[in-house]
Length: 56
Image (cartoon, rainbow, N blue to C red; front, top):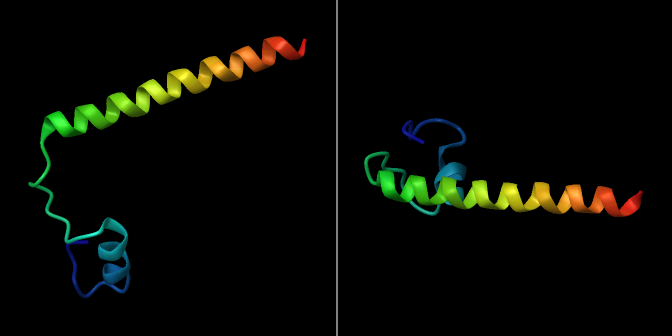
């Protein structure tokens, strides 16, 4: 995204929704998003384990 002449630049900007500015994100926001992913993974693993136990 930092190379405007790259063939996929326009596609990546469209995907991201705006120009990418790496300094424009806070550590708190990153930690919040990682926490959300981790909680979802934990719930998914628990649901999968429960489904495996019900089949037997």
